[in-house]
Length: 65
View 1: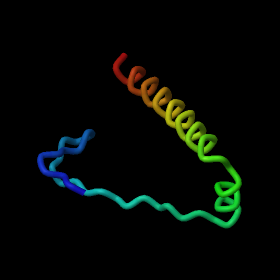
View 2: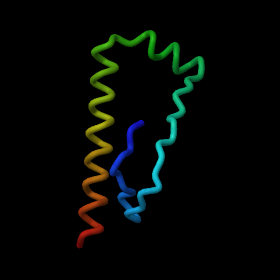
View 3: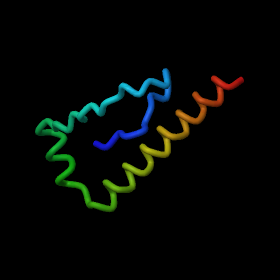
View 4: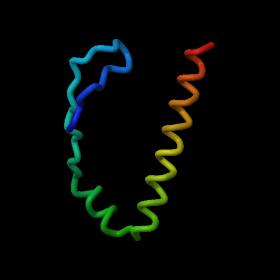
């Protein structure tokens, strides 16, 4: 949590802070994660991240036009 010389990307304010992520899982999610092979979990994470990046890129491109 080191924010020296960082600014908000929207308003350029120096008054920023990090919000902790909510990493709580319900029992079904815990059981689901335990039953998957590590490679499958990593693959799903990579695919989810690719989709999120593609969507963000599309959103940013549409704002520039």
